[in-house]
Length: 110
Length: 110
Image 1: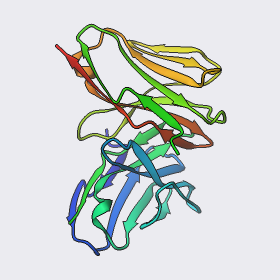
Image 2: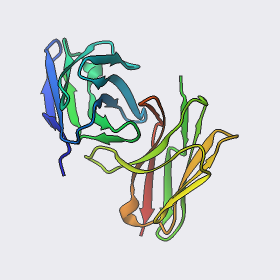
Image 3: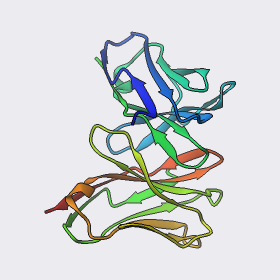
């Protein structure tokens, strides 16, 4: 099923470009998150939102921004992409307990 | 600051054997401890979870053992199967925020 969807699934871009990753969910959860996954480093929290008017920085928010357009939509932007932002990005929702992850976006910054 | 330490980094088990993955945490405010399973090209999926007032939880072949005094918890996969080959993440949560371990890559040999 596709309770949490992410677009695009893959993206190659150049240094300095602005990139937006989008996330939509049909689970009806208020809580949404953006994580970054790098080999051997697990999942690191970029930003999270507990409702439409709530935005919070995670542990690695520098170079990123987010927008919570609606309960179901949470987008992540890289204002000026750099090569060390090459990674796998996951959106997730939560019912306050476990997380429900999207399929991920593989971003490559050249 | 590594708040959740996971070991081993990789694990190879024969079919039918027991796979054991361990995690240790530091923050006693954590109140929910989920495990996630991730297959290549997919997002992590919630597998099983436990609260600190319970010492063990079993779901099918998967069991979480929890030691509150030692601040440790582990995932046991009984009768491991090749289809269990994946990356497993432990996490510790509080107030809607989760901290993840770095992951364990499990390979089950036929």
